[in-house]
Image 1 (tube, rainbow, N blue to C red):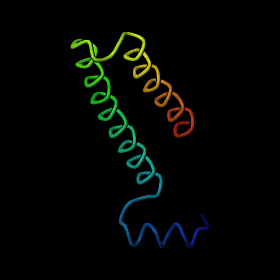
Image 2 (tube, rainbow, N blue to C red; image 1 turned 60 degrees about the vertical axis):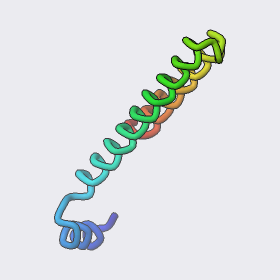
Image 3 (cartoon, helix red, strand yellow; image 1 turned 180 degrees about the vertical axis):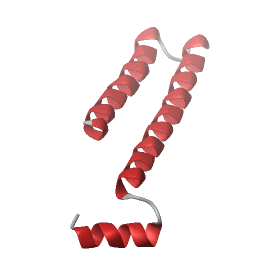
Image 4 (cartoon, one colour; image 1 turned 135 degrees about the vertical axis):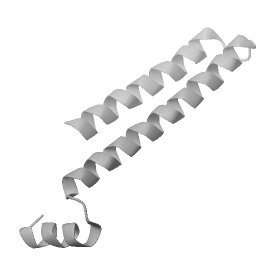
Length: 77
């Protein structure tokens, strides 16, 4: 961003763009972790009630971990 854009953003929002970026990344990770807990818990309940086999349960866990690693790589690098 140019210096004019930076000053306009700061004047209108009251916070620095870097702080806004940090807050947005934090929100993305918070939502991802909440969704991951929900997905893994739901899969665990299905596995414990024999509606999912162990391979399907582990598939849910591995997919969540893969999404977390990919988002961490893209958003924090």
